Each structure stands twice: as structure tokens, then as C-alpha cells.
Image (cartoon, rainbow, N blue to C red):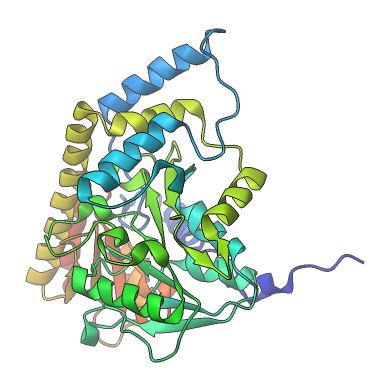
Length: 394
């Protein structure tokens, strides 16, 4: 008889956002006349930038012509996109990253779940709490031991350097779900810790486009020594609206070596074996993000969502809620009223205000008592949702 991977039995019954979708569907079925506003899932709502759609149309035309048709993409991605990423996201920021250290993929979420495959099954893992669920679930599936770094209001939701040495540390900045961001000094301390302990940092920079403060780095490679200890994940979803197109990339520096083996070569081998590459038309769309027109249009998208975040943060604060984030991030992390659990507040919010958010407990034990709201909605819906919450009262 075939044996299953019993580690899956250690996971929650369903993925957090699947559970939310089921609860919302059940409520709307019972209350079909309710106008539900969804500020729960971080799915963008604005159309793709014009520069991106123009590139898509042009690439589709190429695929219809025998002379310009393309099949499988190169393992690491097309050179035109890796060059654009390298120049705009790294060299212009003073980061020493080469094109062959960039691996194009179908998004930061798959990469954040798959990157753990290049490490041993007994590697020790540390994650922040609260935490993006994929970091935890993918390592549980692999049977690893996971430790949690408490991020609370008392420490500003910033993970503290542990006394114990961990093999792998996941950091997300700006953070999902708390919306807080690590300063350059705070991130440098983590790089120094990793260097001292031969650890590897998996740095999720999916929301770097939302950074507004000068002392918050956009990349971990702005820190001294990061090339020897850090892998970085990026997404085109949150800045350029590629949630439906699927495009991202991972950076694995060639200087990152453990046990005499280059992690760049390991990830390249995994990538070539299990992935056939993002579609050509999508990679051309990604290249357009870095065009002069694309940069302006993407910046306008980010500003639109940050205006929403500012409205959410200020509205909740004026209504008497304690709220965090929303400054360098499209997420606002609010404390629920005293005496309520985060899931109880979820129920109250949908029943009394017709608004959907994400219960903090779904992100870990330290998320209990908190609630995440996303700025990825229309301006009209966002303002209406906040106004409803204000009227509901704290």
C-alpha cells in the first residue's frame, strides 16, 4: 500500500484564504442583498498599466508569426527581462547583482514555497509570528522544525535577533501581514547574525515598491555582506497588477555557498528540472514595467493603493482603533476591540458592516487579537468600507 506524506496531516484543514472564501460565500448565500466589500485578500483591483497591455498585444502578434514564434523559455528567463531587472532593481540602487543571479518565475508565492527544497530536511527554520502562511506550510510539508520569532506591539512588530542559531530565517519587509518595515540598521543586524551563524535569510521583498521612508531598504543587498547569506524574492503582482498574469523572480547570489556548494547552482538545477519558464508574452509584459511609460504608470498604481492605505489608517485611528502599517505597505494591521478574538471580529465586521478582512490569528499565535485590512480595492469601496467600520464603532 502506498504511504502518504504524513507531514500534510500536520497542516490546518485548509489554507487561510480558502477558509475566508468559504465563510464569505456562506454569508452571501444567506444574505444575497448585502453589498459586501472585500478588503481581505491582497489581490489588486486596478487594470494593468497601458505599457504592459501594449507589450502583451505586441508579444501575442509575435507568437502568431512563424518568424517570431517562441516555445519554451530559457530556464532562468529571457535575457531582456533579467537585464531590465538587474539594471533597475539593483544596479541603480548600488546593489552588486549580476543577470545570471536572477531567476524569472511565475511569482513570489511559488518561489517562497519552493525555495526550501534546496535545503536539507533537518534544517532549522525561524519565521516571524505573525507570518505569511506559505513560509510555514511549505516547511511543515517537508517535515522541518519551525521556531517563531514573536512580533508584537511591544517590539514594534520587528523580529528580535535570537540567541539561538537557525539555519534558515524568513524575513518579509515591508511585512505581510503587519505592514511594518525593517530599517536599514535593523536589517543589517540580521545580515550580520546570518553571517556569524552561517545562516541563510529568505528575504521576501514583494512589497518594496510601497516603501516611502528613506531609512527602509528596498533590497537586502543594500546591506553589507548580504550576498554571502541572503536569497531575495520579488513579485510583479503587487506593484504592476500581475496577479492574473503571474510573474516574479528570485535572486540567488553566486557568493552564497554552503558546505562548499553554490546555492545558485542548486536553485538553477531545481528550476530547470521542475519549471518550464514564464510565458514569453508575460515576460515581455514584465519588461514593459521598466520602460519610461511603465515606470510612471506603475508608480501611479502604487500611489493609488497607498492613498487607500492612508485613508484606512487615519479612519481607523480617528474611530478609536489601534492601527499599524499603512506607511510603507498596502496593509493596515488593527487591534480588535477588547474581549473579542480575531475570528469573532471577522464575523461582527461582515454582519454589521458588510466588510471582509483577514483575522490575525490566521497568521500565527501572535496575530490573535489583530485584523488585517488591504488597500487593494477601489477608492470608492475602500472609503465606504472604512466609513462603515467607523459607524460600527470600536
